[in-house]
Amino acid sequence: MNRKANMSSSKQDRRSKRSKQLLFDALMELILEKGYETITVTDITERADVARGTFYLHYKDKDELLLSSFDKVADGILENVKRFSKQDLLAGVPHPALSLFEYVYQDPTLFRVILNGQGGALMLQRFRIYASETAQQSLKNMNILPAVPPHIVADFVAGAMLSVLGSWLESGMKTPPQEMARLFYRLIRPSILSALALE
Image 1 (cartoon, rainbow, N blue to C red):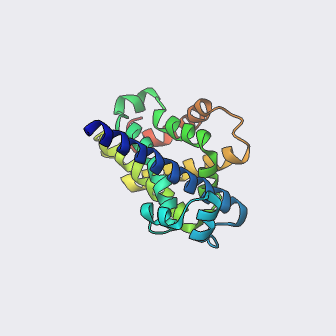
Image 2 (image 1 turned 90 degrees about the vertical axis):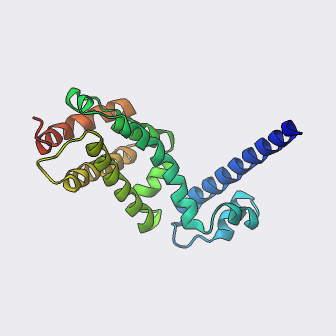
Image 3 (image 1 turned 30 degrees about the vertical axis):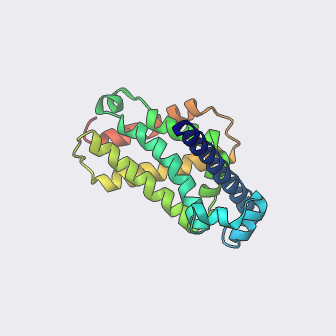
């Protein structure tokens, strides 16, 4: 009995994941075609070939669909940031930046939507807040009291990352993620060390 219940639950989970992916893919396609603001839930469900009831089973509106997709990616990157230490910073290990460049490389459509502003002000604001909070969390994990207020250091890093990611996407991501992370870290590391009074 339990085995049958587990198999049924596993099948439902796979179906749920597939529906969510179809809805997300449909939303991305529509955003690139006509921008975010004019898209309706009906547009999304028709493009995904998913029932409206299924949409509302997972999301209350298109904003929640868009943001939940980004949050899933953000959570994965944040896990790498939590493991970043002061020793990594001093040694020049770029793995938090590398995580982000790799995510962008694997799913450029989502980040193109974010950085081009096609996902609306909501998405860009979410990304800015996330990038700043991630940088602040990294400082907190390293137990560093910066010479410059933490939120300013975080905003500086977030702004630089947004600019570099946008440029990389526009150029067709010809430079590998590993090299982009190395170059980005080489650019910002001196400023970060100075701001943290670690130079």
